[in-house]
Figure 1 (cartoon, rainbow, N blue to C red):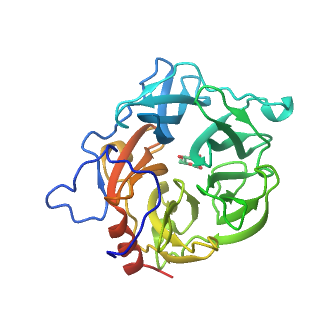
Figure 2: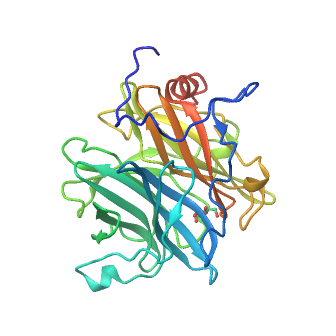
Figure 3: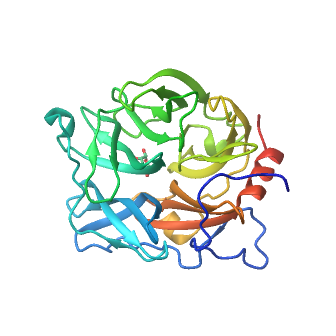
Length: 332
Ligand code: BMA
């Protein structure tokens, strides 16, 4: 793997901790977990499933902050080190030329992706059911909302950080109105961030006998990372147990030019609910990744994930090791 190259801006000061002595797994949790408590805001019931990016001399993010009315709202936040966050008390409101599309209903599970000259936000946007909202910002102050990418019902809309075949590209997960008991990842392209087409199937849930943690539904997590071996994708998978759904996450490598073609896909999970803050909360047994930060030179990666729909955690790893592990354990 020594010849592996990783794209992205240098991030030598990213949040990072070395693998603890005796840690046998390919990824390990931050010792400060959960890094964001549920009640960071006076009005927050929970802060989880959130997106962060490098911004200025530090980091910015869009956070899912369910309030104490239990409404699903988005808030903007800033951090110097990626660990301690200042989150605006006022919810994020998008500017939109079209009143019907811009009418706020609810928003959750945001992702943020830098493409060309701006940051795009995709999120699960309430419009007669959940669908994929799209907006952009340059300063994390003013956000311009565009058309919804798809018809309802859809979730987990995740952009690629550059155009593919000359088009913007997005992964998504068509679903239904509620806690969908099914779900495959699909790929779509757009010439203008408004009209989406060329839909392609990427991955279905795995066979129960082969990889049970991802046998009911799957959904893309953070923005995929471009490497010389392919796009590294972290994605969540769901197991239906006698006590309800269990959300873990694993990794896949997608073809560089045809990202709807998976090359490897991990049989084991990378992180599954095992710590107290992942096992208990408003929704027990959930590890739900929505963002990553990485440093190409060192191969370091930090994955931000929601824990039990209540708080936010961070897990570390090395991209070359994760790719090698994905290859070795692949069920493809
Ligand atoms: C999914 C989404 C996520 C949530 C998960 C577990 O359907 O709604 O926001 O983390 O369920 O409750």
